[in-house]
Image (tube, rainbow, N blue to C red):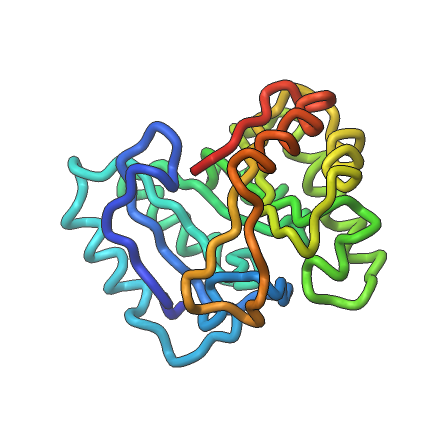
Length: 230
């Protein structure tokens, strides 16, 4: 497996852990506001192979506690379980970032004890999922996302949901619909859209802090533990 990016130290990506973040290339979504455009399109051959990554992790044993595996979408890679298994053998906790489109793979990773924490993106309310993910409406995709959300809410592994807010794609009504869909006491984070220069499309705008706080109030009607991140 080729590694397309490595953040060697992060205090933010893995809650409660001193960690690094590994970025895998490729994604089955085309969210127009995605800030990892080159990763999504798998531009280039990556920066290292899995053996080089594992050598780096071996050298950081005792200093790092966790590894966050992000992308792109990690679950599209058939050899992901093998990579995570080798990381776990080094004694690291593993956090997985996912869009939730592969519930079978997610279930397997959880059942086999390969992931300790999952962060799942919730792109939007069900009625607007396709357009927000940059796809034509696809009932199979939405069904898969719902299955992954249901799996996480069973409490088999620590997890969070998160939504990146974009003015052109999200409304107060959408946040209310998300809350009604995922009603419960799970961790949920609203994140602010940022133009970091590696966008798939661009041309979007962020909500102000005050506007985001108003949307948070709506979400908290059904998700009382929701917070703003960043």
